[in-house]
Image (cartoon, rainbow, N blue to C red; front, side):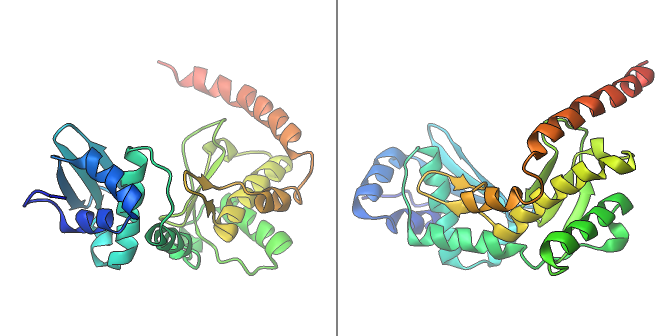
Length: 241
């Protein structure tokens, strides 16, 4: 077993922490390649990625990772390496990494003054109806106009992003905005599960809780989206130069 003199000691440590079989697989695939870590400010919060070429394996990550426990970082390195080589494996360190991410924003709070009124009102309605006013308010903002991705919860930043198709909707359509808000708050509350190959964001427990909103919501939501497309399409045509 040999590494280059300039190889990242952190990546080496992560590779050596695998069981013997997995370690042998990884060592064969990384043989002769330089192992590099780059910390920079280009990434949001605790994001990271891996790039693989003929000569190098580069893991780039947010500077926020510099002060995090070595065992948690080791789990991140292992996860990225396994993904790039398409190997399915669980390790204790990967488990620590997932626990860190799940709890990273669990108690983070947004600022009411910085939250659009319609989104703030929706959060308050859902928090009262489903969470007994016990769920802390995350950062909530509008995103791009999308009819396919209506909302998103970012586990790294604790931010809920809602499609801008919900801006200036009629009072009666708050029903659909509230559902999207409920869906994203469930992600915040329940987190995600992990197996050896993927993260499971919509578990059976999640889907069971989601059904409490309205068992017919998917059918109703499709009708709303179709109607909203027709409402917004004329606006697009008017601004075309």
